[in-house]
Amino acid sequence: MGNCLTGDVAGGKQAIGGVQQRPTSTTTNNAAQNDAVDFFFRSRGQYPLFSQIELSLSASNLIDRDITSKSDPMAVMYLRKKDGKLEEIGRTEVILNSLNPNWIEKITVSFQFETVQTLVFHVFDVDTRYHNVPVKTLKLKEQDYLGEATCVLSEVMTKPNRSMTLNLHGDFGAGVSRKLGTLSLQAEETVASKTVVEMNLRSVNLDNKDLFSKSDPFLRISRLVENSIVVPVCRTEVVDNNLNPIWKPVCLTMQQFGSKDTPLLIECLDFNTSGNHELIGRTEKSVAELERLCQQREAINFVYPSTSHGRNKVLKGQLIVDRFVEKIQYSFLDYISSGFELNFMVAVDFTASNGDPRTPSSLHYNDPSGRLNSYQKAIMEVGEVIQFYDSDRRFPAWGFGGRTADGHVSHAFNLNGASYGDEVVGVEGIMSAYSSALANVALAGPTLFSHVVDKAAHTASQSLSQNSPKYFVLLIITDGVLTDMAGTIDALVRASDLPLSVLIVGVGNTDFTQMEILDADKGRRLESSTGRVATRDIVQFVPMKEVHSGQVSVVQALLEELPGQFLSYVRCRNINPVGSPAI
Image (cartoon, rainbow, N blue to C red; front, side):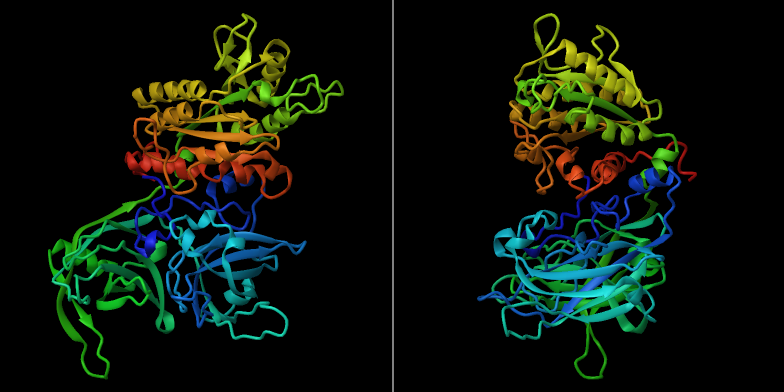
């Protein structure tokens, strides 16, 4: 299950914002909230005074950079740091063929009362080649620039209705002055409520808007706020060529629907690749009214708005709510604070590609001066974070790809050198076991991850059979040169059903392309050699060079995807926090 908000374009027909809500923020910056990161800092007495703000973006009269169709716009929001550099906060989805986009994907930012937060927005026309790529992975330099705008967050927050319209500007060459359109922002504080509603919606007897086939209907649901402002909150997928469509379940958070009595505008539209989606019909209903329709097994007729001031036309097409469930959606911290344990395991790469430990260029260099090598730095920095979340601070610690004292190459040996018992205590224990192994194990190869992944999976499987409230994280520290790509993928796919995540920490400056393939951020889940597709994405790759260059903090980098992977596991198995539902 995992994060089904793909964010890619998929021909413009995918659902956005309402199918299995995002488990947590997935952005990698300090301005967006990730409760695992927030909890780590708060435990150290760092309590920032902020409130979470959600920004809805729309644009009008954008310039057209496409020849045969209209632009396909996406907005990117940055925070300007004190040194003038821009830190990316988030991206909207791509809307196909539109010069007046009203984006559904919101961007969350922490409004810090005591600082001036300058927001910079860039709007891009996304090249057709990238229409099936998740927006997170798009290279912005490869997209056409449509303009930019700047404002200070506090300006937006102090406006009466927290909305603001900015003129887009941009440099299109000497002496070129063009009207680039406007960008509008609507800010709302996020709601802490855990209530979500899940609905199965379908329609019957829809009007046909197509000449040579049937309509391709989808629903767009928007919240009506003060001053007749319409904020789109979700869109279903498109059902092709069907006048009686059944859509996948829609899941709405209280952040999206406001209160159960807030009116929602539900529009049924016929999808057109030109971007000119044609209205089939619409209705206004609150969540409470939709619940009532479900309970009483009633249908509601769509209406078509009157062009004059007469009455709206009542259509024969109807909206039906087949299922309505209100439930609590627990957060990562709800599980951790209830006694759900995270258990970390560590595996260190002892293959020859790291270089001879006696030479200063080696990632395993044993410096006589006592200066830490690349692996020791990674263990220290990463260890501080993982031992915070591991309640007993006891880690199974292994090495792989090394020739041990018995002369054999092992792909999962105990780092502490013991025949029995692979656990070490705390960061100090990992460091001590690593130093001991470096003195007693010869670097060899090949580089096989599958053995340590299988070993971690066995531990997770045993815990699962005992119904223990535990989730396991295997931390692999490596130079990224992998020999058994197929074997590793097979092991990861097998493990994707288990309470397990794999964090791969890359040291050195190798080409980490293989590691990025394992981290299925391109939107495609891993597929094994037998054709089995992973149940969920369980891998995250963290290159330490990005941490050391200051692009991202080690805490942010390590915990970026872990809460989401954890929640995708417990939610798809309906596992509640320990002692719940009394939350």
